Length: 153
Picture 1 (cartoon, rainbow, N blue to C red):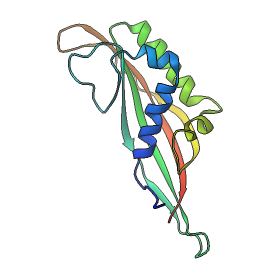
Picture 2: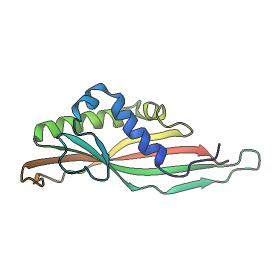
Picture 3: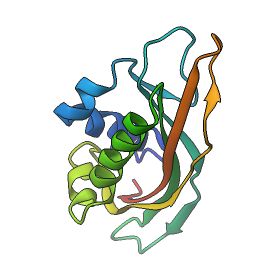
Picture 4: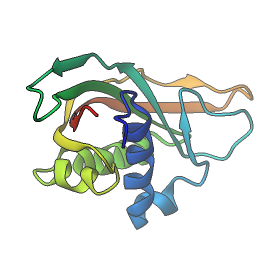
């Protein structure tokens, strides 16, 4: 198998891990979206965005072929018409991706890569705003650091 040196598997892992949590899957009636949510979808919904993802190479020896680590940062944000609902969903996400077992839990959804780190490293409160229809909108989330390792082949 050729190493996938992109963050695609991590992105898919984030979505699969959230959808695997029955409370979050049910709560995000507007879905889970990459970078931006489409117009006219129901609230609440989640958006995840890649912030950065530098690669660190360990070329290793001829026998092991080396490894590459992806040190990715993702913003995961909840959008809701209710501040308390957005805060509660953000708390659930923080627990899901910030628990002691989060690296092992996420690894189950990222085949071919070992998850070495999965934790929340900051909050990203943007405060209330208005959507396209002028409705009050709460936007609450956090930045998550996810490190993976995989063999170079």
